[in-house]
Image (cartoon, rainbow, N blue to C red; front, side, top):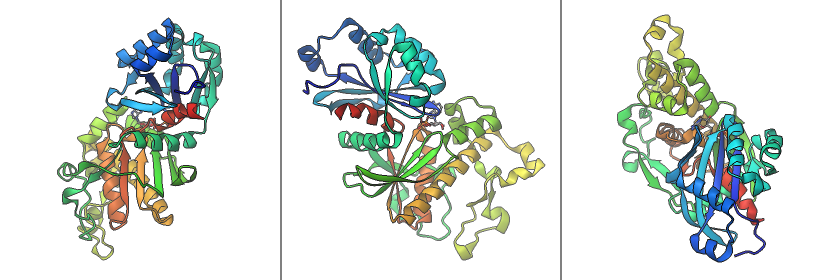
Length: 379
Ligand code: ADP
């Protein structure tokens, strides 16, 4: 172990537009006994974090994402993944103060807009200085590190039989539950990934061309992201959480909301290979008062999800083909508990590129920026 390593506890933090992500490194028992003269305060913080999975009203630990036996700066231990709404930063600071954090850590590596916005609150409330890192630097460092530590990190959604989905020009998009349920999750070997397009779907969306660990640039983005999905869903359905929006969408049918090629052509637009079931105009049916009267909350949520997802897919595909890139990696918390969007993106990437593009996903979804900050302890 590195004797110059900073004192425990080790955290990385990403204070995003919607969610704050906190990654905590718990050193292994043997290490602790040998090396740390662990103080009472430190012990209490470790126990509090690792023995609970809920903190206050809104803090959650994603226990299923926990990573055992990882190595950081010569130390082995466990990574814990915690999130809470950024609107609750005040409550988080109070909790941290009540646990004695103000006496321990004086610097925490942080990224995301909130690292700037809340800088003074951290100093005032818990005597903590935020060492700010660029969020895209942190994101890429986090992705590469987590993938190197977890063989199962990267996966894709295989279409039925893994036949190329573009085989028939007018194959229907898989909007039906029956078609979507045929997609199965399979591991993807991401050991030689370059170049790849990294699409981070948070509140907004950033798209990065990554050529090597230290060679990347931001090619594009869109403000129509996860925040837009949730905001529009709340407006249209009266729902009040992301989980509720996703579960409404999961049982809805967007074809009562969207205008399809079929609604306009009566069937396929065969000349240009556009299948009858393809959305021609998102929300296009909602200009009719009669149809509005009949539409359900579930259908509206589904249409919102399909609209936002397909728009992101479409921009990602254009960027990838422009840059001659075959692998498109999607991450960000919009994909949390959201297999529907992942399957739609998988279909869209493959269909519209005639099978040339592959959509890939990462198990730790929205935590890479925070992990990237934790790694900064290495520098
Ligand atoms: P940011 O850093 O901008 O906060 P994230 O990658 O954390 O971005 O993603 C935020 C998005 O994730 C939200 O806009 C929403 O679509 C989705 N999301 C997933 N889980 C939640 C949740 N529990 N609360 C709010 N939004 C969530």
